[in-house]
Length: 175
Image 1 (cartoon, one colour):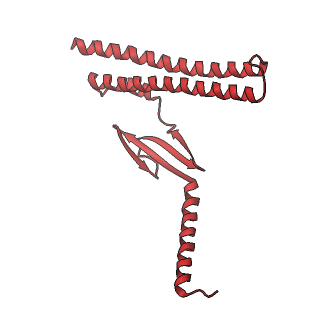
Image 2 (cartoon, rainbow, N blue to C red):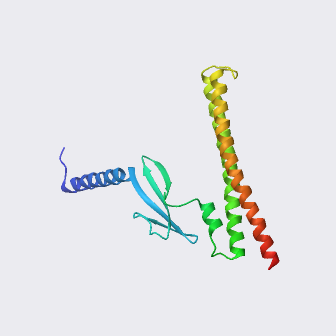
Image 3 (tube, rainbow, N blue to C red):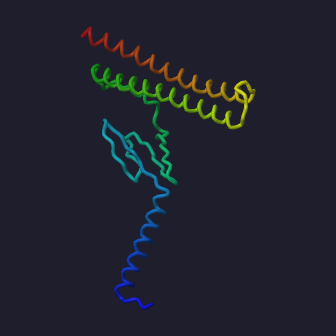
């Protein structure tokens, strides 16, 4: 079989495209990006964020994305409560946003717990264990204890925010 120059040229193109795709795919397997936030504005960068931005590092490896908060940042709830530069109206608005976020987190925790319980139950089923087996009951207790603790922490933060919101609203009404 004889190949013409044109046929070889097309073949070379496909090889070049394949090599470029492999290089791009290899580079796409591991990557780090930074999500920089300030004043409700978000910027994505391949460089660490400036010091006046809140930083979240996004690591992408083998199809999995991991988000890591900047370890220098303190608790966002405490930052909100310590912020003295906001007006009362802005403070109440920020509190409402944080209350909403914590309510969503509580709902998410319950969904995740439900999913984990189903997973545990499926594992028990496939092992053909009884729902009274000590191993299953221990795993069930550990799972429920973990999510109960998470929900308790979330609810205590939520309660604290609601108290601060009531105090801020009372202060706004006085003025």
